[in-house]
Length: 344
Image 1 (cartoon, rainbow, N blue to C red):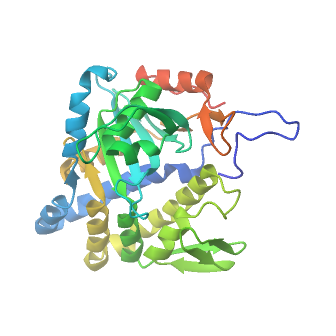
Image 2 (image 1 turned 60 degrees about the horizontal axis):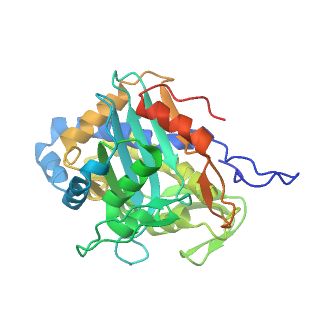
């Protein structure tokens, strides 16, 4: 994704964070499409494995209860279009509901002819509502970084925060744990990266010299978590690293040697399914497979990729706020199930 956008230019002016469409931004679509291909193989040859893998997926009953309590405050949904919030979270800190690390909205048009993926930067400062907590209490409404919502109240709080920010109704959600990501890397025998210079971020245990490396799961997890002492230290720079790495992982997962070898394939599927928690509408392999088929049916060139438009926060360093005008147009297009406006 390159250098961080949304910083002052050489003349001192603050420019909006630019939206980029890179090959790496397709990682989520690649993952879902690969998942569909693999499921087709395993469903045809190993029913017992399919049933065991289906049982690995967790249902998010807590989010359903919390969202049900706030139904009257939520926006109305589109008639046939679907909005799915995908939340990547990291329990690496060892502190309860860790903050969300990556959040994307998948929008599938009502006619099935268009699909969009919108990334929500975690450093956007937004209004977070009072949310039900793990212990049955409620957090206080506050203004904070978007990724704090998950720590306050899990997926339900993240959904309500996103809905409040955008006016877009979330129909389904998937929560994907990063620990499962490490298991997938190990299952495919590691993933290669090449570093132009040495990298070190002691905050996450990342320490690699320049050169080519095949990373195991633990090393890969540190690699995608690294931020503060890597590149320009921005969240957008870290997102670009994650997307590039996930593209490489996709290639390993869909390699013919993996999909045709049950001893390689099953550990990959086990790791992926064990990492997923979903609402009751997406908590089975059948439902995820149907979603993957719908995505595969979208015509070439009909995928839109955006990052929620932001500008630097006026008072908080290294924080962002919505570009209300540009983001408003983006959110309106999704609410009305229209083609996304051109990227600024």
